[in-house]
Length: 142
Image (cartoon, rainbow, N blue to C red):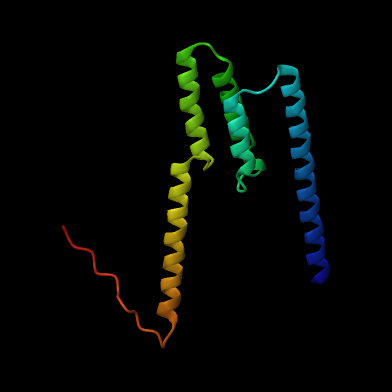
């Protein structure tokens, strides 16, 4: 049993190491591309900063990250106002899908707090020596 757990731990560690090395290779390739293309614009810098600050972003989000970076590049480098507005609109949707906009983050935090409250309420109900102070009223029928 212990040998199986150790083997699983080694496999998991190897998978994390592979993912880390792949992420570092991708970052190096991106740095080389940026060096070839010139300095990224302000929108691309902001998108990169947001992505790097998000702790919940994983390797599975690589396609969304690439889309967001490409749209930020388009928004920074285009002279066509219609294309820029469209790029900003699409970029906002992608960032919202990844949880990188203030509105979506607030919704996620509220949902997490609500879930935590429900779990705490169930824990209180499970205690035989605790009486609820103010039970939630029943919803009105409309």
